[in-house]
Length: 282
Ligand code: CAA
Image (cartoon, rainbow, N blue to C red; front, side, top):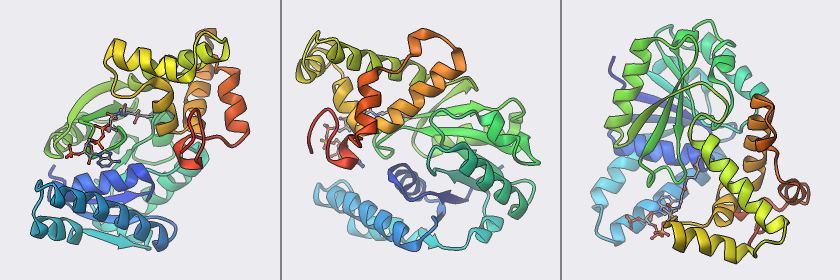
């Protein structure tokens, strides 16, 4: 099955990146969020990134305009009926996601594939909200989407082989490296990444080292592009906490206990870059 038209739902950082990457791979992209003002903001962010690429000589002005012309904002979710694939990238809230998937299931013809960019919620549970669980799959992009080559492709319990193969192939055509993963808490990426970040927070909490020292150890000692605390701020501390909660709840294992300092920061509204303060001030 060939995927030519994609509906991206969600105008946050991930949705913007996915819309950009899909348009860059010459797909027609419909882009929806609850308000067109949110999409306008996302379009502006994409335009800025592309202008930087033009200034660096990595993209021509014509290619930039052509890419942007392939992204069509829409306030009408009913347009989901016209696409081959929907990629949902809304907030990590199971009730919102299942409500959206139920609605998409009503609107879309039966062969349309419904993908979720969830970073840790169970694909099987999202799929169960629809009458087409075999057509539902996880496509977990990494942030920043235009830069990071990985997509975790997560099979729900009922995901069909043809849907898996189609999405795997599409991911390659988007210029990414897909990796097959089964539907377990945190998949692979966050099952490994988040406990590392949580442990870094514990080292600060227990006074083992300062924030800067922990990040320096991991950057210079392990060649990580960002230290774990800088990365936590980049991802969002609320997101990190919610993923740790899903791991803790899903495995019932004390090794996934979220650090109290992480909880404290989230309660205080220190959410990282997006709120101006996390482990660092922005
Ligand atoms: N959007 C688009 N492009 C971006 C970007 C963004 N938000 N941020 C940086 N870039 C581009 C730059 O334009 C630049 O492009 P060129 O090479 O074409 O010039 C390139 O990325 C490198 O950027 P910089 O030189 O400004 O900065 P850098 O070398 O310090 O790299 C970084 C920035 C790529 C973010 C790097 O620090 C990095 O790889 N950090 C780790 C990111 C990471 O681990 N992401 C995964 C997070 S976990 C996740 O996403 C899963 C989850 O569920 C939580």
